[in-house]
Amino acid sequence: MGVAVLREGSEVVLFLYGIAAQGGTSATAMVIGGALGLVAGAAVSALMYFGLLTIPAGKLFSVTSGLITLLAAGMAAQAVIFLQNGGWLEYFTGTVWDTSWLIKEDSITGRLLHTLVGYSEAPNGAQLIAYAGTIVLIVVLMRLVNSKQQAARVKHA
Image (cartoon, rainbow, N blue to C red; front, side):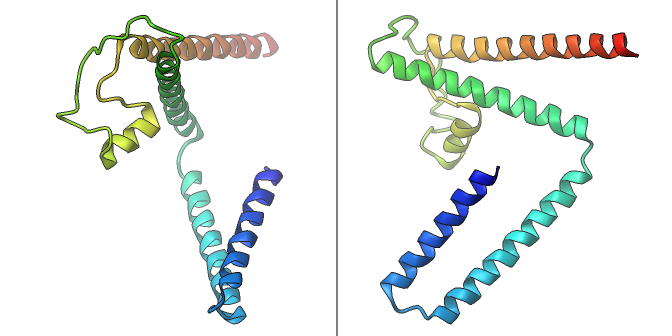
């Protein structure tokens, strides 16, 4: 966590240095802008923190687990495309359906869905197998871990 904060801080320093190197911006304006950015970032962080406190932890983690599962499945489907484009996987390459009439992949909605859940307007069979297989694998492993944790809790009680 500390490394991430350090990296982001160094990016801000480099960004501000680039602005200063271009000229035309006074040091006072940069300090005021930096302070306003810091205050705005702290305010947004506080709002998110207190907002997240109002959500029950169980619900929050179940929703985030579902979103992460869909994200992982989308990444697996994208990996299949890379393997197919590289000539390493040449099975089930036929298009299963085409929803480009509904949501274009290069539209804002399509890009958002592609990033979050791996949406493809014309997926092939291998992509769907990878997508479904990833979801099934993650769900099975999550249930296995949860059942072992519950058994351990019962044993210690």
